Length: 97
Image (cartoon, rainbow, N blue to C red; front, side, top):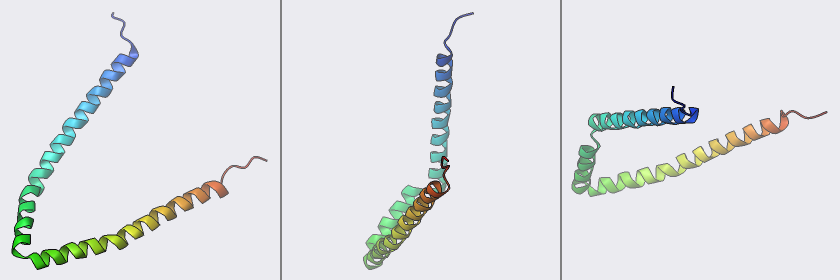
C-alpha cells in the first residue's frame, strides 16, 4: 500500500468539493439567466427610456430618493442589533467571584 499523507487526500477532497460547487453555481446562473432574461429586459428598459425620457427621469429620482430612508433604517437596525448583542455579552457575561 502506498503511503499517502492524509493532508493530500483531504486537499483533493476539498478541491473536488470546490469544483463541484463552482459547476453547480454556473448551472444556477445560466438557469437564472434563461428564466429572467436580463439582457432582453435591459434592452426593453433602454427603449422605454428613449421613448419616455420624462417618466424615466421621474423613476430614477423616485428610486434614488427612496434608497436614502431605506439605507438609514437598515443602518439603524444593524447598529441596534450590535448594541443589544454587545450589551447582552457585557451584562450577562460570566463574572469571576
